[in-house]
Length: 196
Image (tube, rainbow, N blue to C red):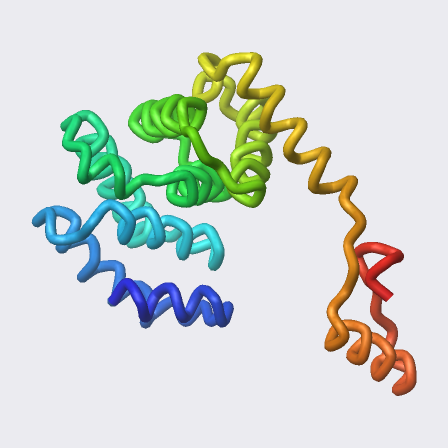
């Protein structure tokens, strides 16, 4: 069910009736403690990616938040290790995109940013997701990020600026596609001038 949900999200197939049935079963599994922490975090990402917000998905989001908080509080290193930098970034981003700001999700966001700030290794992509979430949460839900240290905020902001300042080059496939669209007279745009 997890793999199917992720595949649907990657393909941007938002078949809500199918996903509702999947998430009803997944929610049962969360209540019975049958899922791993990484599976729950990726399912939150699926919800955010497809912007699934009706009551079925809100119920899962609430259950997932409680599940993850329980795992983090347990202190079980195996469970907490299942929430690495990618999962932390995906969770922060997902909760922010879904605007799921309950008392529990605020506490989970606080835990995520605390864990991330002590991480010894973080890929730029994950730092950028955390920066995006931090930036939005600073305005939309300040309580969730009020304890994020200034040095960590600075680190995330710098990682964001480094990535955005980096010269980006397009793949040969992207260039060929752009040329084909131009040849066919199909209007399109590239995010960066150097993408053409």
